[in-house]
Amino acid sequence: MASSTFLKAGLTHADMVVTVSPNHATELRTADGGFGLQEVFQWLGNRFTGIINGIDQTVWNPATDDQITANYSADDPSNKSRCKSALQRSFGLPQRKRTPLFGFTGRMVTQKGLDLVLKSHLVWNLDAQFVFMGAGEAKYERALTALARARPQHVGVQLDFTDRLEHRLMAGADLFLMPSQYEPCGLTQLRAQRYGALPIGRQVGGIADTVEDDATGFLFDEFDAQALDHAISRALARFHDPMAWAPRMKTAMRRDFGWERSAERYAEVYRRAANIARTR
Image 1 (cartoon, rainbow, N blue to C red):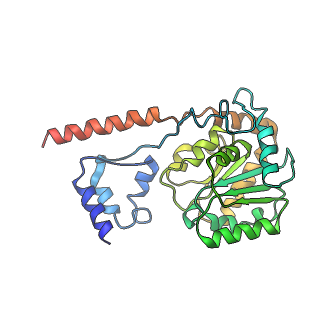
Image 2 (cartoon, helix red, strand yellow; image 1 turned 180 degrees about the horizontal axis):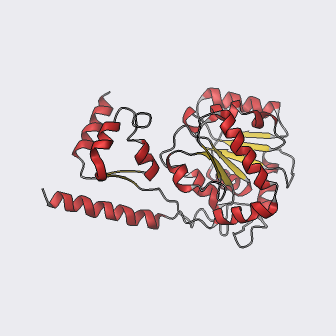
Image 3 (cartoon, helix red, strand yellow; image 1 turned 90 degrees about the vertical axis):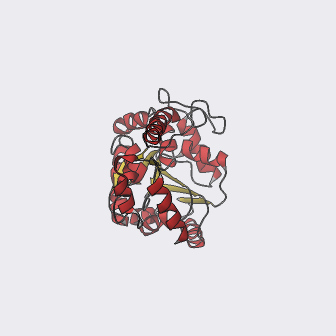
C-alpha cells in the first residue's frame, strides 16, 4: 500500500511520465491494466506517453553473433538450420530439420502465460519440439520438467539461464512462445524476430506494438489456451509452406529495434518536461 501511495505521489507531481510501449500506456488507463492507478494515468493526459524499448543490435545480430553455431542473415539465412540442429542436440532432441521448434525463454511466472502453455492441447500432442529455458515459480518448473519427461522426443527444459544459451535458442528456434498475461514491452520478441524466430504472442503491451500479425509473428487476443492453440495452428500453416514462411522470416529479421529511435523519442519527452518546468 505504501509503495502504491509513493508511486501515485510521484506520478501526480511529475512533469512527464513514460512507460515502455504505446499500447501499455493505453492499457494503464483501463481498470484491468491500471492496477488501481488508472484514474491517475487518465488525469495525466498528454503528459503520459509510451516509448518502446530497444535492443543492442550489434549484440543481437545473427550475422555477427559469436555465441551461435553459425552466422546467417536475412539475405542468406541458410545457416539457421545448422543452429537448429545444434540446439536440438544440446537438448537431446532428434535432429529433424522440418519439425517446427518452439522456444520459450524468461521468468517462469504466471505473467508469462505458462498456464496457457500447460493447458494447450497442441503442446502436449503436436509432432513438434519445444525448448523452455528460465527459472521461476516452483510449480511451473515442476510442470515443465514433467512435460519433458512425458515427451522426451519433443520437449527440452533448462532451468539455469545463461546468456549464451539464450542466443543459441534464438538462433535455433523457428517460433517463440510469448502468451503473456500482460507485457509492458518485452525484449524477447524483439530479439527473436532479429533471429528469424517468429513470435506467437498475446496482443498485449509491447508485443502488440512490435509484432505484425501474419507478417513477422502471430498474435491472439484472449488469455485462453484455445486461443493460443489457434495462433500456433496459424503459424504452422505458414511454416509448412516454404513459399509463405521464407518472406515472413526475412521481414522479421529486417525489423529495426535499435535504441536510436527510442532515444530520439526520450529526448523529445525531456525537452517537453524542461519546457513545462520553465513555464511554472
